[in-house]
Length: 394
Image 1 (cartoon, rainbow, N blue to C red):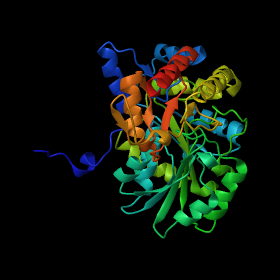
Image 2 (cartoon, rainbow, N blue to C red; image 1 turned 60 degrees about the vertical axis):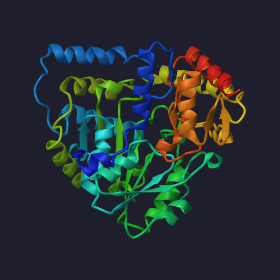
Image 3 (cartoon, helix red, strand yellow; image 1 turned 180 degrees about the vertical axis):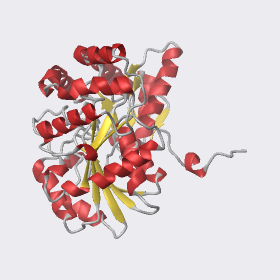
């Protein structure tokens, strides 16, 4: 008899983590799986960041940390926001959390009441919809497609707004599509929101530095949106620090205080050693991680060139992050090697079982026509993976 709560029974499993777990199982069985499912840089954390962590251990940082983060880290975040984004926040507007995922969960917990609607441009990061649902909210999906680089227009936003709309959540650069909203596109969205002063924005900017067009823009940079925008960021992607688990927000003070209060009852403060290491990461000039961005740009070209050779894979050129999001609907309804592919989920499972390549179904991101392929892997792995995919589908 299942006596678990309705809350957990109705919760989806994270598709990216589920695919990674399935790939690990197959590896344990001796199968040579190439993992292109996780959004995890294959670089090592920069040495100067590791040295800061070692110093923190030797300096005996081992006590509980302030719930909202060390003052020195908050100051580093304030400096980073000013330097990279032209945003001015005070210490009382910053909350450090155990990863940007917790930052997003905090936001949903403190902002949403039952039935409040949250607009999610599709495709969206895999956990947005379930975080919203867990906190009583209702995800409202706005469909986009490859023809407009998976970006929501101002007109689409306007059409999705109802009297119950409480928030808009989006990421730029976007996971899973790699799309980057320009200043003009964000301004058009902000102009719509000016007509609806009770709608707040969560702007997820975790991929900010992995940007191939050289211009990142934040919704909070517009004076008329600053007091209604929560800017979410962290060090996982740009500094190859996924396992260090540090994310943070810059927000209106009343929202930051509420997130601090919520976190105080859930995890308290984030890890002491990781926080000290992140101070050094954020104080460094972003040019220190340019070698990673340059490498991702080369891999992007490689994977797009290779995927162009697979009939039925329709791709666009993502402007940031380290994913491609090909439309694979040309294969739907076809039977290959005795397996019928009806949707993106079938395609992902087929590629795992037949090509031994782990990808993620676009269904998890709100787009059932696409699959997400991460190119945060070596060029050799990318080349071999696409070769296997091509052979399996031919």
